[in-house]
Length: 87
Image (cartoon, rainbow, N blue to C red):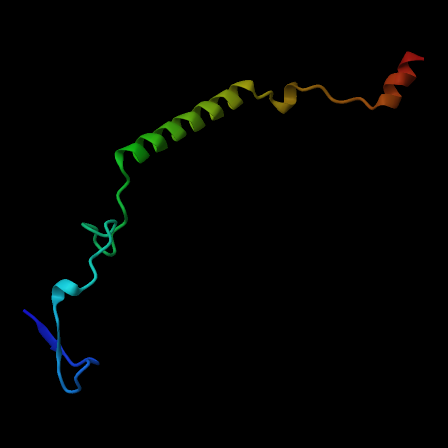
C-alpha cells in the first residue's frame, strides 16, 4: 500500500507517493541474519580451527619431548678458569 509523504516536488502542494518496494534492499550478507546474532562459522572455518589446534598440540608435545631439564645441563665455566687449568 502506498504511503503518501509530502516531499519537494515539481508542483507545490502535491504529495508524492513513496512505495515500500523503493526502500533499500538488505545487502546479501545481511539476508537471513539476525541483527544481534554472532555469525556462525562455516564448516571450512571449523575444520581449519581444528587443524590449527592439532598442529599447536603437536608442536607443544615435540617441544616438551626435546626439552632438557635445567638440572641435567652442565654449568658454563668461564674461559679464564679453563685456561688457567690448562697451563
